[in-house]
Image 1: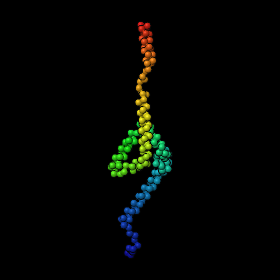
Image 2: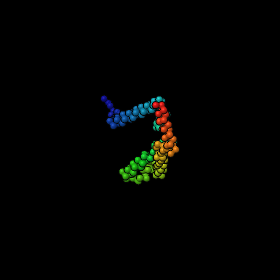
Image 3: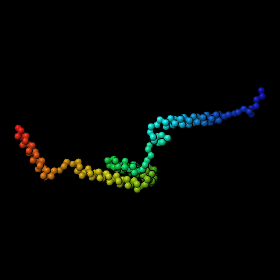
Length: 162
């Protein structure tokens, strides 16, 4: 038996594992590509099609500000709570407060302008409600007299019927 040991191919356990892992990774990639292809064919949401995020693209920050002002107090309570949370975060992380505000709102001035706008709208609404819109009307002297005369007339009519 003449067998040349040098001509035999030797493989280690690590090499076999590497090959198996490569095959598994390739299979997973193929499965994901196939799944993605089937998803996009049947997807009804246009923002998910073609690898989208599922959300419509943002047009302007001004639109988001308008959405906040729809709330009864124009988002004032929400902005104040946000201000408080940013303060707490600054203390917790020992960072500058203005940096945190800049991360969330772009700049301190942008946050201040939103807050002032919300305060103005909220004060206008508050003044409108306090202005007597919901109060009973206070009759003037002539209207009170007219009301009393109607009451007397109604009582006379009832007496006449009896």
